[in-house]
Length: 466
Image 1: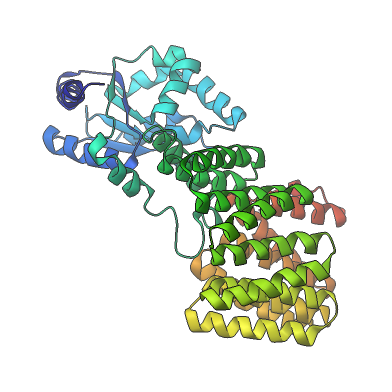
Image 2: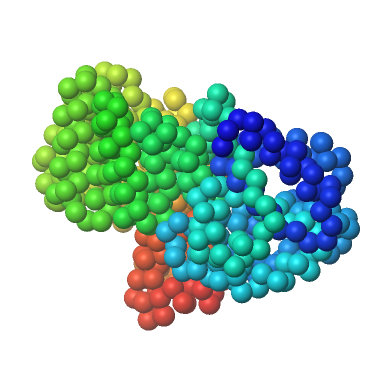
């Protein structure tokens, strides 16, 4: 779209809002949420009359979209147009069943929308609008106009960055604390922003990486791999070896989750070689830490310990205290499994001191969880529960819901083994509710097995108790 055409879109949309009588269906294509917010504010100022805003984000699984919209709008200002946001969250790119149901509903019940008797303006990113036009053509063809608002090239980087604010939160990646609805919203945001960045740019690679993290958190490992592979191709083309090392570690993580430890190790060794070549010592420490976990899973404790001892030296050399906490926890894990509890406790107490010194709450909750496992292995289940409760308290405070699921599962296991089935099921039930809300398939699989081991009907049992 030429600049002159782009500048004419706003007056055209304002003309429609002022002159459209009764029902009218319009689409606005805008990829960057932050830019959309500025546009909406400008439109509302220039229109100088009420504009109703309805956001579908987080409303998956409720009654028909049109029914929700009609019920919500019935007591609102007569004739005021409606700006509808969030439809893309009900059109997830890798959930074909959800996508089909939404599009079928829109096509099938399209005439119900006319009962609004007001202009309906649906704001969508480009990929979702294209999907709607292709698969829900009856509904799409019903529209009166499409308005396109590409982010201005000169300001593109700034609007993309503003749209990503809030995605990464402190120590934890967003994927660790988002609810399912939030993950769906961010999948839509990131997919939309991809259309605003050149395909072979560093920004495009970054967005693909974040998409990979979200898909991984949703248990969609094949899609996560596709995102990481695409990002890896770009950073290699750009000659960015630092990012290449990061992507190789991300890919290795997926293969580890999938149980393909040999393939995971291959990617980690490639990452190690790159980090050593470019002299990125912190990256070497991180990679060695990850390699140690593969050897640990394979039962080769000697190689795992060698990697961790080398990582620990590097952590201290480069001042990577967060990495040092992680390394100390992994060392304690191995000594715990070998029955050397005193050595394991020494490492964990050292880790706690570092966490307290640098204010690393994520590391602190991880270390509390590790301490609980030591005391449980020693038969001191009451002390193990105390440490889990300390971990739980931090997880609730910082919103680390994925970690909270783990703590609740472990607490349930201890209570069950103590014969406290009611307390155990209470912890497991809360873990189920959280895991369902944040779409943690791994935790749900564990709970499914737990219920079946108790002679219940798997996840259906937890659902019936909710």
